[in-house]
Length: 428
View 1 (cartoon, rainbow, N blue to C red):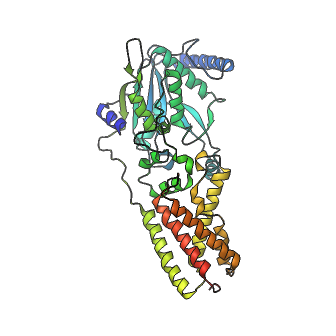
View 2: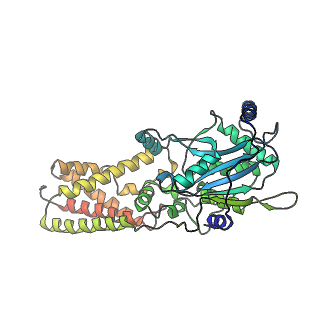
View 3: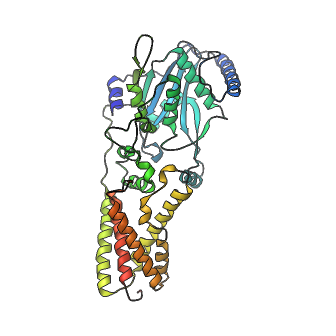
């Protein structure tokens, strides 16, 4: 919010016209020489850590951090960052984007994402094309922070980005919290500028999971799904540095950072521009938390029907028990996969496995096949009820934050399990 306020207060029209650009032939020669030199440097060291050697940028070069505000698509809900390097004397106006991925086949992409083996890469692009795309096609304004850097710092940043953009260096294993388009830029500026973000817990204390809440207020079902799939590691207390996996937190840190120099401290951000910003742009409009209402109604239905069934000693009801135990069993399979198979660190140790058990599928199968609920199934149902009760009793105490909307579902499967276990007649 502070970043947006600063951008809207100090925004001005940015001209996209480039003057005094070198000819295409001279520019091609320069870029070829630069790539050759960077390739030589890459063979000599793992990464170019400084600005020693030939200079590729002139004194007119500038560097900026670009923050693209959140969009409507799922992958754009949390915003985006890129670095821009401009040198009118060299004909350079590049953006460096660590958030590029190959979508390809939707099923293959989803499988890689769930497994945690999704590769992203650094892509070098043209600034004009970025401006033409985000504000006009996705209605996502850009906020650009021009950085007050000396020639050596600009050169080091440029060399580092160019080296990372080489095909053999561009790809990295994506991690939503700890290695993404924002954290890569944070690490770059930490390394080059020698400044470190705060490592103390945020005040007031917030967890990694809670940092996502403001971005999901319009998507209650997505919010619930993300909370369901994340385990205890997502509830670790977040530091200021941790929070920079979110692009606007990175931009806010840049705005507050000061660099030490021979003439004293100076702000890292010299000026801020905005592109595509309008004063009437509205914020997020929180949606009703309808999952709470829906699952509360499910609990009320299960309690009322189970009460009637116990009194009348009626058996299972396929129209109720097959979807209830079937869907929760599938949810349990998902939790097991994310905990024991997936590479995501934040999906481990998930307490929802106490009530969303994959073995619920056995009950759904038995009801679908009209199999009598014998002693073994009744024992299983009592165990399910006890497990759900343990989960509900521990909600105020678990290290993992439990969404309120999921409490009725846990209670519903516990109540229904008790009701079926008490049934003495065969199913109807």
